[in-house]
Image 1 (cartoon, rainbow, N blue to C red):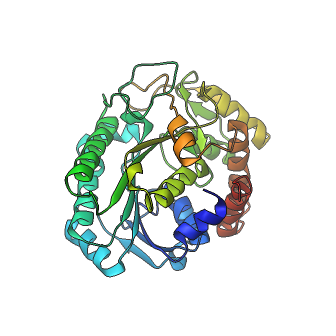
Image 2: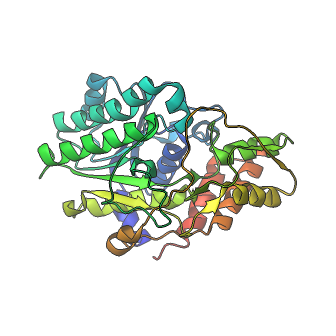
Length: 357
């Protein structure tokens, strides 16, 4: 799908984004606005981090509706859909941190599994949403420490609360898809790796930890230097989500699971990420620290995105070094108190130049 077709798929459409104040949700909201969509957001009363990209880019006033509420409120979700009448839905609202899952397991299951069920139920009880993309995670796969990427039909399984809660969400989505949505709503799930980018201020994430340390002149804390992850710039999977939603509008047969991974098939170590960010920033150092939460983290995790390439025409456009350069550019602009709404648009426009028109 070309950039022109992407604009045609979303221009004038009312799109509901749950978790719109989060890191990925904010970038998705900005991109949808740029494509001409009328965006309705639904998130908790406060953004998940302070500062947040949503607030520093001043996105609230540019949306059709900036609604605040809880995924546990099914009545509120149904009322929102009936009032705003979205035809497309992106579900991103979640508890997204593995470490928080160990600290708050019940909350993690309630939000990620129970919240997803409520969104599905709200779609079932209304007649407006025709296309829905539910964002899960690469961690839904049963970890085999394989040296090759997981494919969409590989076995699911989670050994920690976060991963298990996302597997439960996937199972619920599949059940609703086959039980209630045939001929009504095209529903797909999207699984991405470790998504990084400007505007991420979350705890327990490598790149935000690095950027906070560099901006404050401190040594970067690094827990697991040799861990390999499928690092990818935030605009890469978002492009995939948009392509998927655009194609689903005319092809319900695509209602299944999709991986969106990075260019690098072997993955990149946390050490390499940190050292490249320090070089790009121009100063800094790192120090090996003890893990800050209990539980095992995956040492090796990679995704196969051949299905998305073959059936959607999607492919990652940034090498990992380019992704990190974009991140440093964003944080330097933030540190210099630039217009972060325009900075975000500039990043999207730079990415769009690589999409075939």
